[in-house]
Image (cartoon, one colour):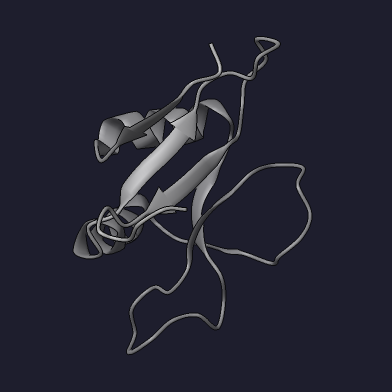
Length: 95
């Protein structure tokens, strides 16, 4: 039940985020040559880093250009929705 999944499918990623009220975002100041820098999701009710909301098209264009994979979890072991997610590059080894 708490297994993570990996996808590059835009519809799956967008649906997962929208079910949690999350919006595509970037970390201000991380842009380079007019391109988005750090990709994130802005979840309602969570503090921390100040994120700048961006459009889905721009977010996915950056996601695709970097050939990223989206690792995510649908539910926690107790059955509640999970916000766990991570963007990974498939060619970088994980420890």
